[in-house]
Each structure stands twice: as structure tokens, then as C-alpha cells.
Length: 261
Length: 261
Image 1 (cartoon, rainbow over the protein chains, first blue to last red):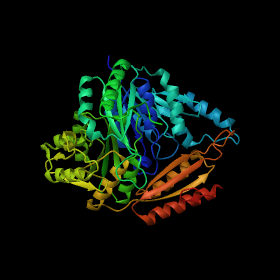
Image 2 (image 1 turned 30 degrees about the vertical axis):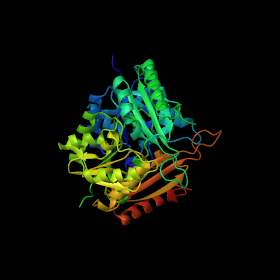
Image 3 (image 1 turned 135 degrees about the vertical axis):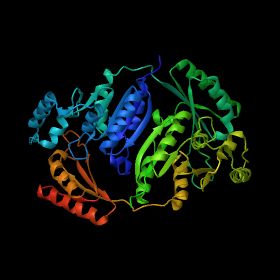
Image 4 (image 1 turned 60 degrees about the vertical axis):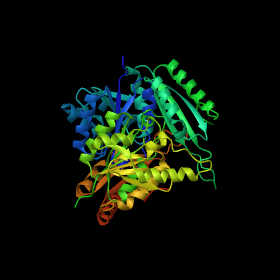
């Protein structure tokens, strides 16, 4: 059976304007791969209601899981939660258990934090949503259908994801092996590499040049290429890796297994 | 007149798997903002022909400019160029001037580099495409219609973008001003901030909490909030910034103009 698929929506003007560098994509891509729920698409979209509603509805029909980051705080530009309610066509209502937990948490603080209208928005969820509670904050993320709504702040997002992960039905973990070769140009190995890819159609074999410029030199004397085999069968990944290693050795290069130091 | 809009397609399995951390989004978001061609959407998609063709056709109809990064090297997983030809319904043919320039460059190298079949793919462009030549490499990016195809390696992408930029018809640059306040919770300023946003509907006012955890402490005593006003009118951005500063001062906080040290 094929692995379940995932899509990530990064919601926030600050990423589109370049002010904030997204730090969530790589974490979620890696963790979802480990769970066998490979990430198939990512979209970065602005804090615009019509865009969020339309995009959520498009991708939740297309992928098994949708993860969103950003836009669930207390300020006027935090509209993800309301938009998910609109996308599902359900009311956006105070979640009583969440309100009580947040109020308790705020009362315990020194000085106490006021449960004002802005913070009540964080206790308001699409009707039928299941809160994602984590150790970092009493304001929760939530799951609505196959859409998992999380914070944008990386350490809170990660905490929410790890709280959510045990409830996700994963697939076969994706495994990968890399071989690096210094001083090898992609153009010299492309043909042989394609032949290896063709022998292993179930794998995803990628070629990624890297550069370590040496001061004063021209060209890329410190650079080379990383050749990565990826798939759900470790045996086949290792077979392709051995073929890549032999291919590089035959052309006089020195293959380095794994990530280079 | 409204500013032209842009969409970025990041093409590559390595970003979706978490192996590679994208380093192009923030650069392009910032540079496009400076040119008055704000980035409205980003998609990360895999090296899959049908997906690339469909996505290119969807977004080129929707935005004034589409920028792509990744997938224009010589290996089997580099399929962006062929896919753009398919999306436009034009043949994918050797671009004679590019072939000659690449052959010259390769002949000059020591040792000379072979212009083999894999490298010929980098001289093959959609019919009618205009090459984007840069100082970093003789293998070009290209512009086809409103789609600008660039390399995925950040330093090459940046070089291609700067070669392309003078030919882009920009709009009014987007300007922004940030005010930071340490020890201020978003939940305490949300209402006042929303009132400022409502007074300046043409601006985009965002609230971004930041955290600087102090060892051994609970809560976020070193954290605070960044309040960013953004728009095409510097006068209005400065007006909103002054209102935000006054709002913070009135609640006893110490507003810091610009990015904190």
C-alpha cells in the first residue's frame, strides 16, 4: 500500500516579505519522512482570508494530511483558525475545556495574565476540532478533519508536532543513503547515474552539487557532488548506493559514504 | 496602479525530503520587495513532470511574474527546462548561441571539460526562451513568457537574479519599519494594535513574538514582540510606527525602533 501523503501550508506575510526565514519546513519534512508520511508539496501563503480558505480546501482534498504553521496567536493578523472553520463550513466557537485550561494557566502566572478578548480568540476553535496540547503553551493547536493546525514559532510548532505525532497513522519510513565525491562534476556522471536510476525505478536518486570555494582559486576545487538514493526498501537503497560507489570508483574518484565531515 | 505580483516555485525533491534547507526564498522575497514586485505565494514541488507542468501553467496565469529555482542541471532529475517547454506547448531545442558559449567555456578549462550529452541538455531551452547569463556559469537560466527559470544553488541563483533584475519592470518598493518591545505579550496589545491597523487599511501591520530564553527561568523574560508596519507609502508607514511607539510607551514598555541589537 502506498504511503499516506502530506502537504504543508506556511501561513504568514512575514515569510513572503523575507522578514522571517522559515524554520519549520525542514523540521517537518524530516520528521514526516521518518513517519512514512512524505511531504509532497509546500505552499507559503499570506494572511488573507480568501486565500487561506481556498488553499485549505484545495489541499485537504488532494493529500491525506495537511499541516499548517502560523497565524494562531492573539493578534488581528492571526486568522488561520477562523479560516479553517470557514473552509470546513462549521462555526468558530469557544472551546470550553481549552478556555478553562488557559484561564487556569494565566491565573497561575506571576503576575497573573488577563484572559482578555484577544486571548479568548486562542480558545476559539472550529466546531469539532480536537486540540493539540503541548508543554510549551496552554493555547493549543488543533486537528480538524485531516488538517493539523500548529503555531508558527518553531519551538512551539515542534512541541505541538511531537504531541500530535503518536496519533498519526504513518506508513513505511523513507530511508536514504548519500555518497559524496569531491572534485566530481555532475556533467561527467549524469549518464551513468541515469542508468542506475533506470535500474531502480522505485527509488528516487538525486544528484546535488556542493561548493566549497577555495580562496584565490577559480572553479570549485573543494566542491563535488552528493548522490542520494531514497526509498522505502533499505535493501534496494543499499544496492543502488553500492552501484553509485562502484561507478565513482571506476572513474577514479574517491566515494565517501554518508555525509562528509 | 497596483504593483506587479510574483510567485516562486521551488522545484526539488531534496527540499521536500528535508535533506536540503531552502536558502532562496528569503533572498528572493527581500529582493522582489525592494523592486516593488511583492511575492504573493511560494510553492515547493517535487521533480515530477506532470506536477511541474500543471503548476507552472496554473501560477503563470495567476501572477505577473513566476520565478523558479532548481532542476536545470545536467542530471536525470533536472527536468525543469523540458517541463517549462511542455507547459508553454513549444519544442525543447538546442539554443545555438548558448551551446557555442558553453563549448567555448568548457574548452578553456584546464583540463578541458567535455561538451557531452548531459551538458548539452543545459544548452537546450524552450523555443523562444531568452537566456539569463551570469558570471557564475556558462549554463544559463532563461525567461519564457513571464516565467523566469533559475538554478537552485543559491550563489548561482543570486547571480542569475541580479542579471535578470534590470529587465524586470518593478513597482513601488515596499517599505517597512519595525518597533520592538521586550517583555510585552502579544495578548496585551492585540486590541490596540488592531485599532491602528484599522486606521491604516493600506498598510500591512504584523505582530511577531520573539523569544530569548534565559537559562533557568520560566516564561520568556528575554522575549518580546516585533511590530512591523509595511506598505508602499513611507509617510503612512512612519505614521503607523509613531502610533505603535506611543501605544507601547503608554503601557509602560520601552519601544526600540528598528531591529534590536
